[in-house]
Image 1 (cartoon, rainbow, N blue to C red):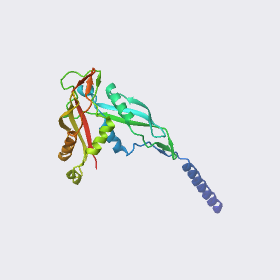
Image 2: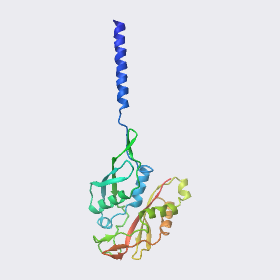
Image 3: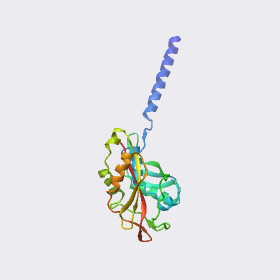
Image 4: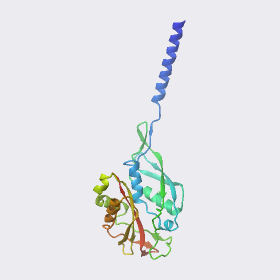
Length: 241
């Protein structure tokens, strides 16, 4: 009897193991979509491309817009929508930048690329020492306002920064990293003037960011009601080892 019981127990254990093995074979292995370069690259992309809407900055409006979109199995972005709104101009800017994103590494289920939703919080925060973006003459910014634009658009601006920004050797030795936020005026003619550091990281990084801003070509000026106007422009320059 004891031998029979042992055989029965052994058989039950084997059946349990087989059952577990069968379940593991059907586990749904899901890998979410990924921005090329990972989360750090995604943050840098947002920092480099988001322009604080002038009226929202003037009104000192801050907040976090939650945006959701579908990453297709090809990696392309589709069906962008706002899940949590802050204000229309902030929502619109968040959606604009999301639509600029390069193709993602698509999500996978059981090794196969599939369409998969992706959610991103886009934060808008004014630095304490940053002046609001306003028309330099002091008039209110109207609804019919177009911000200044770097010739060639945001991608051309990113390329300009990649080509011209040189990591200061002293900062490399000290392992200093961070995002310097520069602020300057794009005047009615598109020229960059009144360059200053709005958010400092380190003396060497600040100096390099200032140097590069002085190299910027003329922008297409901002337009208000169809007329060129002078406005402040914020430019984050990220230094990452």
